Image (cartoon, rainbow, N blue to C red; front, side):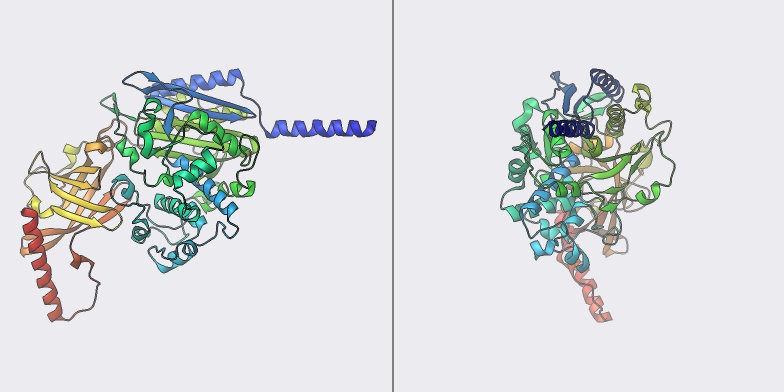
Length: 572
């Protein structure tokens, strides 16, 4: 009997020691002091209005709020203040899909979409027939993201999503290269609703938020209900904070599966506990099989350069390698530690969640501005510093070097444009009315080019409900620089971000050798995204066929006649 008691004692002691190691070390007061100091210094130099933080190490969860959630009223942020998380919320979507697969015995990550939606069509037959849930979650389709459909607030809806997907352009061969695609996460929300018979928002609430007691979680379309506890979104204009219209955030409201969740630090602490415990709720009950949850954090699509970057020298004094994309997570290696992480951005809101699964350490940061690289750099430096502290490593950044990051290791040119020095100054090379009219894309919706209200010598473009910009002539004929105005003015004119684009018109001869009218245009950005819009005329959708000379003359006459009618309508 004595032998049994001693054996049991040593066994329980060994288990306790192993659990202590596996669960990580608790967060000490000294660590909290160092983290607080680093965050405060970074917020000051980067002009961050407010910040939300949740950390987990061992059994400890630390939540904090810093700065001003409302600059105008002076309302301070705390651990209950709600911040929007952007694409950090893609992990909610992948976890929900894991739960649905767990409950449906006939589903797997490799279930083909056409098995669930027979009418599903993408650009080509191969993609249409072979695309799986794993392909959607891991960004493996090789198709253009189609973000303009969300940003404009007027292109895609749940009703026309399936029809619109077939119009996404190919960027790379199927499964050939990682191409981030929000439209595929919109489709995942649609599939979840189809399989479960409930709205996506209800599914997330019932399967994740309620069991984890995440009572603050709200979807972007319902932000008005949380006005008193919401961190307002900000940008810097002329050195001063300006609030960004919440309507710019709500444009993803129809598809919260892409990243439309807003939540507090306290609730994100519960989310970290769930992830680090292998999928258990607060009572220790599994909400999803641990194997399926681990699948979301595994490597499924090599990131561009990822398989080669391991052979390169580190960019910074420590090694940090993003190896692949998982499903709502990016498996990576930080200073020799296995890590998964994901960032999020929803205009002024920027966020980051990360886990060191083997060490049982996790973190979450969310900022409410300003728009631009400064907030992203702040988020990156704070994540690195906090990770070092919790991992017991010597931090390679501090309050001073963090404010200069990525200098001196990497230096990026300051991309600031003086629009007046770029645009063509002089009389129009064509009558501006030649470019005006209504144009259309089957996925991105309607675009209107019109004479600006402020000047008959200026063009303006309107896309969807909220997308508007001024068009400035460039020296090359039929080419214009795009500068945002209206709700999106901050994208071009904020202190820390300057996004401009270009519009190139394709012209059709109308009345004579020197009179033309625009039949289409290409909208492009420095990111490489390009979007084609065609004038609202049915003949532009006619199939291309071989014709003889008499048929060609007949079609040319029809083209001229139809263009004449359109031009008269536009002038009218």
